[in-house]
Image (cartoon, rainbow, N blue to C red; front, side):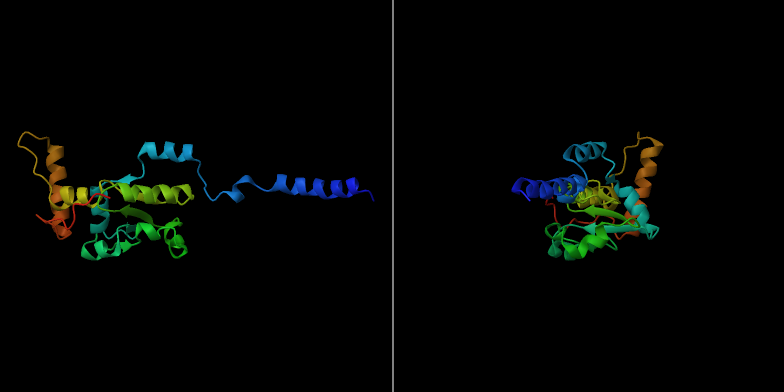
Length: 186
């Protein structure tokens, strides 16, 4: 057989095999940058402190709080029932089953919103579902749940109801004029 014929016999099947392989097998990301940006712009990844506080108080079994701060910070203060997955360890294989699942509502948090939102973006880009971010992080949690500001006398009934809930939630969660352990933004 001629060398050209042998080459053709080899290249044609290889071309068919390559054409049949899905494009995404070489790329671990499930969302394009454009898709992730569009999803991030909807801001649906954020969960308010009030919603999280209500779920904690009601002992909602679907809630899983994930503190992405360092272990030292986690040990100094964490939300009730939270687990610690430091941001630097987020993509470790040991955490895949926790992050890539469809049973729990995972809520990432840090001192601020930035690091938790980065954790959400990484997990979304990998195609993981049911991961969210605590709006404002622990800093906002302390301001709204543990040390809520009383509304002015001219505030609406809705503002007073929100304040009453926050005050009650803060008391139920051990708050009430608590001093925050760290003001660091992350």
